[in-house]
Image (cartoon, rainbow over all chains, first blue to last red; front, side):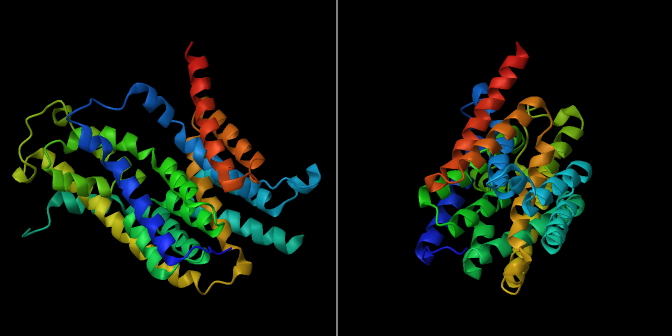
Length: 112
Length: 246
C-alpha cells in the first residue's frame, strides 16, 4: 500500500512528529531546574508504554483472524512471527530475528 | 575544536557492537518509507528529523494505510513517550550545559544512546553522581565534560549511521520486488524490540492486553485499535503491578 497523502501532508507529519518527539526528549532536560524527576504515577505508567505499544503494533501483523481457528493458526505470518519471537528471545539480536522471520515467511509461502 | 576529545572517540567506539542492530533497522526504515510512497527526500527527512526508528516505522505504516493525520501523530508520540523517562534520568548529568548544547543533546537522545550513556555515567565512581553539583563549565575539561563528550560521540555517530542506513534502504527499497514481502520486516523489527521488554509479569500482561485489543480492533476506523490497545495495555500493566505490590 502506498499513501495517497500529498507531499505537503507528509512533510507536515514529519515536522510535527519531529517537533513533538524533540519536546519529549528535551522535556526533563529542560525542566530539571523546576521539577525533581518524573512524577511517580507517570513514571509507573510510562514503564508499560513500550510493551503495550509494541505489542499493539505487531499483533495485527501476525494474527489475522480467519474463518476458522485452523485457518488463523496456519497462517505464514503467524508462524513466521512465532519463530522470530523465539529467535528474538534466545539471541536478543534484531538482525537474527529479521532473518529468521523472513526465511520462515518465504519457506511457508513456498510450501503452502 | 582543535582536536577530537578522547571521550568523543570512546563514545563512537562504544556504539560499534550496536551497529549490527542499528544498520538493519535503518535499512528497514528506508525501505518501508519508500514502500509507503514517501519520496526519497521525505524518507531521509523523517530519519534526520524524527530519528526514532519505531515511531518512524509506525508513521510510514499509518501513512501507507491513509490513517487520519491526528492518529498518525498521536501514535508516533505515544511510541516516543518512553523517551521522557530517558530525559528525566539523564538530565542531571547535563545540568551544567548551556541551553543551546542541552537542546542538541536532547535531539540525539535515543534508546541506544541513553542505554550506553547511563551505563557509562553510573559505572564510574560515585563522585560524578548528579548530586555532586558545582560542576565546572562544560568545556572546562573536568570529569563531567568527558562524560558528555562520550555521550555526544555515541549519539551523534549513531545519528550519522542512521542517516546512511536510511539512504541505502531508500535506494534498495526502490529496487526490491514487492513479492519478496520485505514490508514484513517492519513488524519483525518491532517484535525484536518487544521481546526483551517482556521482563516481568506486569509487562507481559501489558503486551498481551495491548496486542489482543489491537487485533480485535484491527478493523476499527482511524486505526484506533492501535491506540486502544496501547492504552488498555498500559492500564493493565499498572493494575497488575498494583495488585502484586499489595
